[in-house]
Image 1: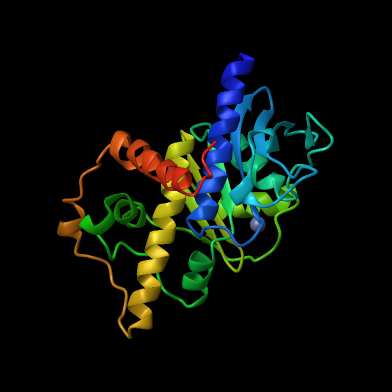
Image 2 (image 1 turned 90 degrees about the horizontal axis):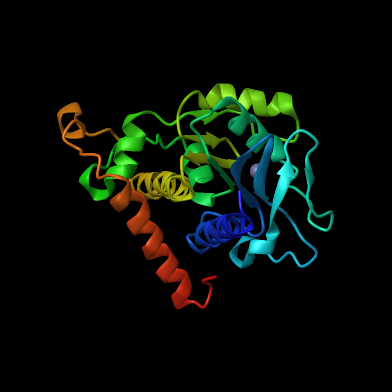
Length: 243
Ligand SMILES: [Zn+2]
């Protein structure tokens, strides 16, 4: 891999961090993203000497991390304590290239309120409806996932789904691209937001009928992922936060 493409990936992952923070999917400074590099390494969002939180992530905060030793390529940047999340998912799921871990307040609140993340929306947000229709697993432990055995438990809860809700903690979202992983994280947040609004208005969240869900088309990655990525990047630019 050339240095140029590595740098381009750093920019992509830093943008993803900024998008998640700007979208309200991150509580203060917590959360991280990773991208598979091969040979037991990954690009990982680390904490550097000038850490200011995910909204202000810089490409230099994205370091090459050895997943076996848990060390970064520059000791001024410390890998996240929950690196085992990334190590476990990238190790067990060859189709996953990008892993997001965030602490989104709405997703955590919806789960704790007992609001089920079922496909109660369809055409409103098709990626979110389809994600829910496939099932959204919940990992029932609220622990900080700092050890391989804790990550293995989470992986078991997650199964083969692209996302997992971590009770009292946050989410894991994955994708074959950074755009896809970001879309999955936002889709989970949309389900939580709508679910909380319905429950807050005294309603009950119920899935749409099967025949309606069967009508939801896969809009394809250009619309679901790339268009939304450009939209979110434009939102960053409007606030002077593009890279
Ligand atoms: Zn966490």
